[in-house]
Image 1 (cartoon, rainbow, N blue to C red):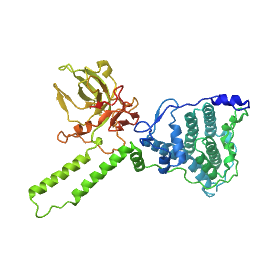
Image 2: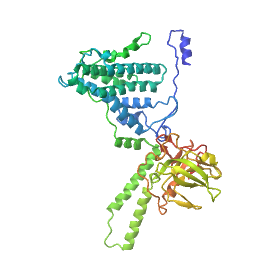
Image 3: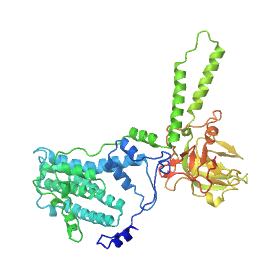
Image 4: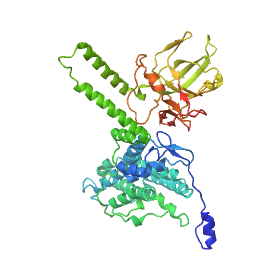
Length: 485
């Protein structure tokens, strides 16, 4: 419709030549859903106090250009702390801070001259790398491959960091001032280049760095292929003139700490109903705990009555404490499966759950799943049930599966293909460590199993919270709204 409209005007518009489409960005717990309160939205992102440039960078690196991608808080933390703070921010701050040091320790905020830079070995090598990365960047941006364009730009920062470190510029300042000036002038040229290349992705970041460089945002570099300007990338030491005075350097990014990640994950995980339910459960548990703490036995009360009251309180507290995290559910890989030698309806599997040796597991799946389909596939495994002997072979875990109402069809709960073997399956809004071994008396498994099911989108859930791994949610193939055992 839009190109047709442009043609219909009869005017000389620039016509569309590339269509950029994407797949879906999913959330830790499945799909984003504003109606259910699942995920982080505009107002939520603002309330986290995480800067806009961090959100822009993370979402663009996670852009689902070829397949669905997954938003996770730990991934956002890793990209901020590792790529933005330790790579990009560290490179820029080291360069500008050194230039800003007073004479005798730095350059008193004045960019030094760098004669002979083109013949300096490590500098000419860096220039070749930079030129290739700029070409890759321009090609990717022309094709609207934004992730690749951003990756190429960030590669320049990585190259700059390595160049700085290998040069040991802090030693060169005293021992070889000419080489030091070449390294610093080339590096500050890369800083300027980065502000230009990253401006489409993080405009506020670029404006801030250009302010620290004491440059106008309108002075961006141009790399027009038609004008033959790409060749400029081979001389990064020429991007900024000698004698230019920079501004005051300040840190560009702040670390995102583990406690902040946990807080955000808890706050924005699950549906609004689940959040309210969890808040009610937490409040009830706190109420019971406070009652236990403040309860004092009256002097006149009988021992029998005291014991009864104490038992009731403990029972209520224990009930409030039953949580899905008590289950040690892991991603397992069936290394080998074979028929049980003494039972026609049972398989015996050797399952890798991230331990030194695979666990032996006995499953009643023979009449539901062919033996060949049991080989080398990833499954969800409950690892902290007490071992049970089944027809002479002890089973040390349980494979989770969904079954139809009439129990005529059974399907395995499957983690994503990229999920790591041995990683724990998590449930948003629920934190803690699993029990080492589930007690038969406490009936923890029986109580929690009643709320395990697949939903209408075939996602395995505890209540309405998906089974989640670092690679995404766990699913069944076709059985919707089925119980999982």
